Amino acid sequence: MQQQVTQPVRLKTGDVVGVYVATADAPPFTRDMPILSDGAIYGVGFGKLKVAGLTVDQAQSALRISLKKLFRPEDVFLTLMKQRVSYVYVIGTNAPGPIEINPDGVYLNQVLPPMTKDTDAQRLDVQLIRNGKVLGRGSYVRVLTGQDPLSKTKIESNDLVSVVPQASVRVWVVGPVKNPGAMVLPEGVTIYQAVAAAGGIQTYETSTKIVFRHGPDTSEFPARPDAQTAGPVLTEGDVVTVVAAVPIRVTVTGQVNKPDEFVVESGTSLLQLISKAEGVAGGASLRRVFLFRKGEATQYDFQGLTEGTSIPDPKLQEGDTVYVDENRRSFYVFGHVKKSGRYSMAENKAYHVTDALAAGEGLDEKGSMRRVYLYRAAPDGKPTITQFNLDEFLTGGKLAANPEIQPGDAILFSEPKGLTFNSLMQAFNAFFILNALRR
Image 1 (spheres, rainbow, N blue to C red):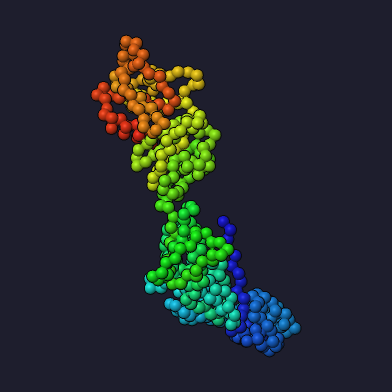
Image 2 (cartoon, rainbow, N blue to C red):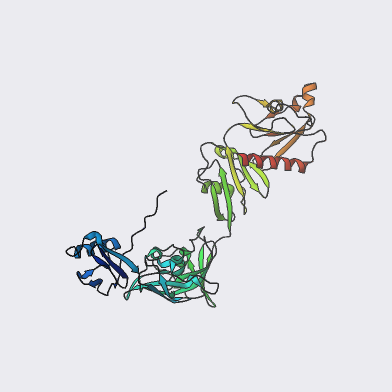
């Protein structure tokens, strides 16, 4: 860890130094000498010696040189007896007045009055004045919290720090902007500058507009300024409202080029959202597109789009999540089997439910061959669930009791008593949701 280096104290006007001379053949000489307004000390044998701005060691060396004709250097000493008290003057809102400061100096944000619950800190500025000149001005909050470079300005003796009201207006920006709410802005800002200060419009459509309310009067402006539309200047209490089609927040993830959360117009479809995500990635499966809504999962098969087939494209709702799965042939096995999961399907090979049972490493102690359910997605998003008795194939050779599996199918091995349709849908929905979360 790097150690902080302490800077040596430098002498200044008003400090008092002690001069001490010790010789073997005379009594020691001691005297306290103030550093006068010209930065010098005066004494017999050396006359005038300017020491302001020097360190104590440097001043002692200079004194020894001045007295070398009279005394040996090692007999002459100079010490700092008393430092001049320095003040900075803080005036304005909640100001404490004169503050004694450390001779080594302090930073501007260290002398500011603290915020109080009765102070509208957002509407204050800090001004630093030195020798009658303004060195800088900044937001009180930003200077106090160290966000403004001015906060690290070193304070000098007799500096004047004023906490003064800003030339500002408080307005409201609402609607689909990043940071809606009340804002304190400099005087002279326009409606477009206020929208930009609020983070900008988060969803822009051709129908988007800005409604400006000033007192009882309202007027409308385009969402984007043009050469002829600078927009009105805001005054205290004005309200700027961005009006757009009702926005909804939706998410697309999985095998798309830009998985993210999007704010879109209500009425946006599933395929339009995928387009906003810059389309499906190279490894995507159009047969396995899932729409998660309020705890339920619906699978869509859009493979027909590549063949020119018209496919239903559902409209999205607030909070929907679209998941595009990977493009690989697989089926799912779960329920009362020893090993639930997703299993790959080799190309050009037919798979049947008996293959699913083998992949699941057989039934567990509660499983039954008589209650097997096959879930298959459909292009319209309405799945089919078929129940069959695998025992009829294993003991009697009934082929219909061992149906062929298609990619994306899910096979549930149940208990002997079976499940209701609603229980089946809940089980399949829960399985698909958990499987997507694990990916």
